[in-house]
Image (cartoon, rainbow, N blue to C red; front, side, top):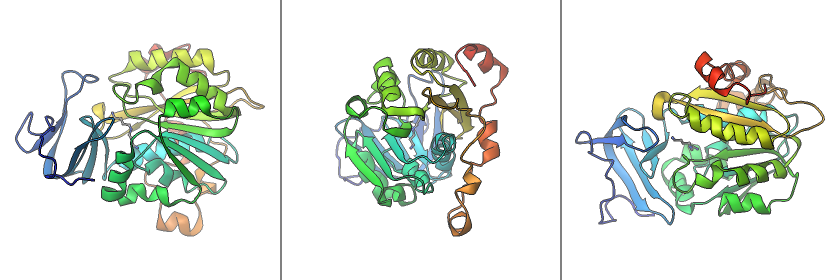
Length: 314
Ligand code: SPD
């Protein structure tokens, strides 16, 4: 892992592009706007086999992880996304034992899964080893999830991993991906969703990163329409607030296969308050997620309800 300065070729066109000393998130998925953070210190800058990986210390959000110019997490607000993408599906299933995480190489989802003692094994497939190493080096409070002995980490292509996965073995699958430009593109396409439903047990639940209601409604609708044809159980959309993501919000698609009982995503059947108790609740409390937030996350503004009418089942 090369610290900033050891790589002679400057690739960071997102630094200083709008104002000197500022990082600006300029990208094709949010044309005409760019979130900027004041840079206190560049810490890491390298090109992996898949993407441009950067870490910098910002003035107001702590350390920031950037992939291909797009903010993946900041120390200050990462908990909202990581808690929601993990506990929304985990609390929608009784006694989840076998979990798969696709992507999520920073380890934050693993950190959240480690709160669930019902889990026997967590498989994780992350395409980019550099993301795992950088997270362990610069974000120890996020990468702490890798210390869970139930984790089986595979460095590889998530699309291929799921294609080869045994049918019906997972209770929960979490797809913690970057945006559908670059290495994560295949994680937003029909063949991937077909394998997702195949790998889940009857009544199993998947949760995927599903972009912003303010910026990406057509993409959300397209993907959810595909999924409504593939998943025979329930289909829901939830969202949360993350100040450093484009538009300050990000959503999650919740999917279930047909099972003995219909999954009602809005009503957690495995409430977190019964799971994180005693010392664990005191020493490492949740910062965002609770059962009320869970149910509230599925309440959609009228323009979103109108756009997704007919594809959302719960
Ligand atoms: N637009 C950025 C979306 C990033 C989603 N993935 C974040 C990874 C955090 N574990």
